[in-house]
Image (cartoon, rainbow, N blue to C red; front, side, top):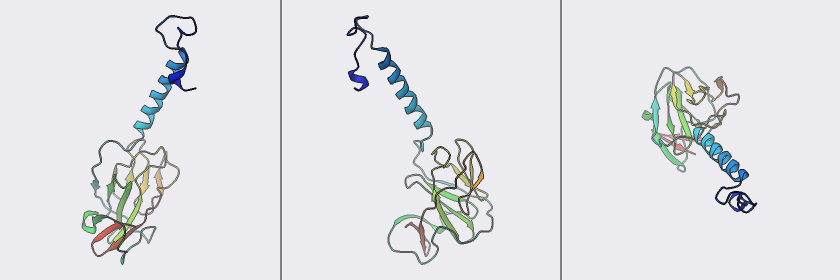
Length: 166
C-alpha cells in the first residue's frame, strides 16, 4: 500500500481532515532523504572547472597516452589541461589531470566517500568540497580522508593535441 492510499484519520473514526500519522511520517522521511541526496549530488552548475598548480613527477597510469583512437567523446585540447592541475568535466563525470608535462590521466569526478562531485584540482591534488577528501592527480589514490577508496580510473586517448574520452 503506498502512502497516498493510506487511510486518513477520518476513515478510522478520528478528525475529518487530518491525514494518518504514518502518512505524515512517510512524507517527512521522503523529504529528508531527498534533501540528503541532493546535498551529495553533483550540484546544479554544469560548467567545467579548470584549476592549475605545481605537479609532482608521475609514471604511466590508467589513462592512455599518445596515438589515441578516432572514437570517443572529445573533451579538451591538451593546452586546456594545466600541468600539475586539471579540468573537471561535470557533464561527462570525469576529471582529466596532467600530473607531469605531457602525461594525462582521467578519473571519475565522483568522490568515493559519499558521491559528491569533486570541486578542484591544484598542486597535484583533486579535492572534494563536501568533506575535504583529497586524491592524487597522478593515480587517483586517497591522500586525505574521510574517503578510503581511490577515484575510479577513466579511459582517455590523446591524439595530437586532442583529448578524448575512450
